[in-house]
Each structure stands twice: as C-alpha cells, then as structure tokens.
Picture: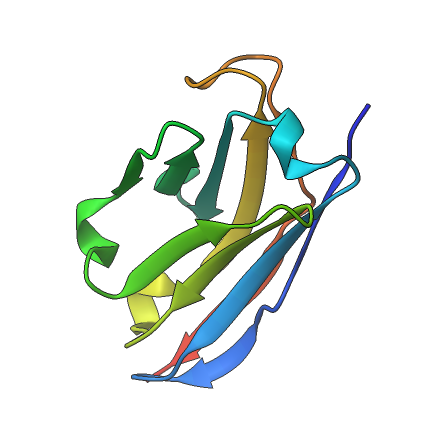
Length: 118
C-alpha cells in the first residue's frame, strides 16, 4: 500500500507563510485526487483543499486567496499557505485516492502541526 508523509509544518506568526509537502511512496500519477485536511484541537477534521487530475481545484472558503494546492509528477503534493491566521492552527493531513471523489480507499499521512501565533 502506498504511503504518504507530510512535512513543512511549524510555528509562524500571524501573516506568515508555510509550504507543506506531501511525499507519496507511489507516483502521483497513480492518484486521481489529492487533498489536504486539517484538525484543530477539540474540532472535527475539515476539508482544506483538493486537486484532481482532471484539473479541478477547490478550497474551503476560509482559505481561498491565501492557500494554493499543487502537485507534480515527482510523487509530491504541496500546500502553500500565506497570510496565516491563528485560526489556521491545526494538524494538517494529506490524503490521496485512486478515484476523483473521496472514498474509503483513500490513504492518509500522519499529519504535520501548523501553529500560528497571534
């Protein structure tokens, strides 16, 4: 089974930037969909951004204009996060799937912590 490993999290001040990476043990060409989710303390995991091989890209409303999702052929997906706010503090998870919609077959990384100080 393919594995996903996130990196790039850390502590930044309000207004700062981070770039998260998601490394897959299989070629990203194997996946039709990759996405980022996040889970803040005491809250449920929520969708952040998705990118598909048919060109679809979408974001949750609160990050539009600040976050950018991308991927390449080198088994990597990225989440560029600009103008970070304290409410962006969460563990960020990468997920990838062989289908263009989320499914129980999707694989998940272990998560990377993002902390934004005010």
